[in-house]
Length: 141
Image 1 (cartoon, rainbow, N blue to C red):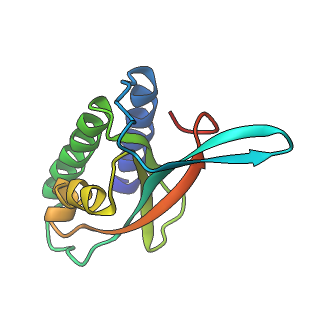
Image 2: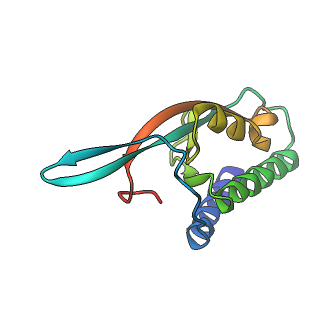
């Protein structure tokens, strides 16, 4: 039941995020031009953070719900500030619980932001950061 509630809250959260995007200055981000069949794309480096199952499972159901609510609020705040451009849970019950795409200038910045997530601090989630190149305008803002 909690898993269903968490997924429902997560999907509602993602829908709300899509309604309130904010642009950030991308001039400090790593980019390069890529040409394909006469079309020039500006490739930009993003950071993909996998949210993995953490080691902590000792909290009560009520505590887990509070941590989940704080987790969603934290990510929503980062989205509002323009640090996150895409975010959500995975649909299976695997080791990787979800993913977040950070629009920041370094892996260290992405790791710092992801590590301050209340669910990470509580040990319910762990993070894994990977640089990811994507052409601007082809999937994320």
